[in-house]
Amino acid sequence: MTFIDLLHGFFAFLGTPSGELLKTAVELIFFTIVLYMIVSEWTRSRNREHRFLIIAFSALVLGKIVSVYFLSSFVFTEAPLHFWLLRTFGSVLDISALFLVANAFVYPILIRSRTDTKRFMAERFLLLGAITAVLSFVMFAVIGLSSARVFWIDIGILLGQIVLMFYYSSFIVKSGFNISYRLNLVIAFIVFTVSPFICLVNIMFFSGSNLSLVVASYPFPFVSVMLFTQVIYLKLVDKANLRNQLRVSQERYAHEREVSKLKDEFISTVSHELKTPITSMKLYTGLLRDGRFGSLRNKQKDALGVVSEEAERLNNLITDLLDLSRLESGKSRIDLSEFDLRELVNDKLYVSMAKRKGISVKIDVPRSFVVTADRNKMKQIFVNLFGNAMKFTPEKGRITISARSLETGWDFCVSDNGKGIEKDKISRLFDKFYQADHYMTREKGGVGLGLSIVKGIVELHKGKINVSSELGKGTRICIVFPRLNRY
Image (cartoon, rainbow, N blue to C red; front, side, top):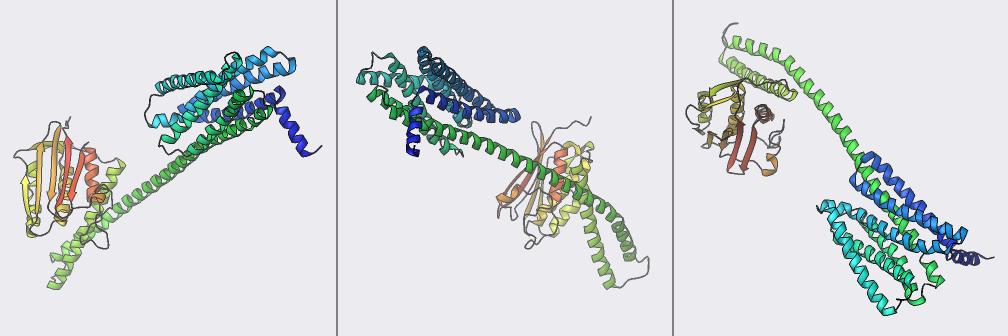
């Protein structure tokens, strides 16, 4: 016996009830494997989409179990009644399960488009049922099969499968959502449709008796089952991939947070250690300049002046680092008190510094503007914002300091008509060590801690910061403070 003879024999076997039993049993095994994959994933994620897929594939598995039972009864007990029950009850279960599977696969699209899932399913069930009924009626009228009851059932179910698969294939294609497994899913639906189409041709032209067409329809359900399995695998792998990426991201975030914590602790420790020698340097520089250790020539005094200024600058930097460290560690607290904000910002020292640079200062704060806040920290906010404005405002420029009462609190603003800030840099303005100008091209000093400290202090007061800026026209920084109770 040749291979061709064996092949013909196998196909002839598939055309018998025993062959159909084998085919259905294999389909049952595949669908059971798919169901197991989905259930395993659902037990970990408890995802609603997976629950929907479990219901759908459970229905498919149930349909195949019923089909295997009735086919087994027919093959082993030769009970014809069971065979016809199979063709009705099993087929109805299959198309119902297919409807659930199709909706389960389009469920992510419905969620993304915020569609009511239950309403969508009910409307599509009625619509597809009506289309199938109309097509069945037309076909019965054309080919005149009204006397063969089994054909009524078969044609209706086959047409229902074709309409169902083509509708959901077109729906997925037209949805516009970029789903990684969309093409695989559409192909699976179309391949699944080939088998009922061949069966429909067999019924229409050969009254279902053409064995070659029956055998020709068998491979397509297998192929579609494999494609459905591939789609499920892609979905689960995609989820697993996302979970793995999330785990890696969480580990990286935890590592970065630990490194940041160690860095902050290091900065805090070093800053504390530097504070003492800097204080000693300032003390002895002052004594030298005052002539406590002997008289100095002018050049020596100038040199000591430079040293004194640099020591003061270093001292300010260390103070900023310590302040920021306390703010970030949560050790900094606010000491609320009532004070006149106009009196605080109308500081002659800073106003005179601006005037020496040729910058005019306008204080637009109402008289006796009493607020409740931490006075010392509010002074820090003013000094940092005013200092920043002075840095980037040219000669003959203008700085405006304003405040006003609001329904839920009050605001404090510092604006200038300086060079302005690029829009893409505003979001990073309050990051520590960030400078809007590149370190190679900027003309102004500083390490980018002042605004970070401002942000920390504002958050302690439960306030909000708003920044508006336009290149060449200036910058406006406004802080909105809520009304706080001292007690």
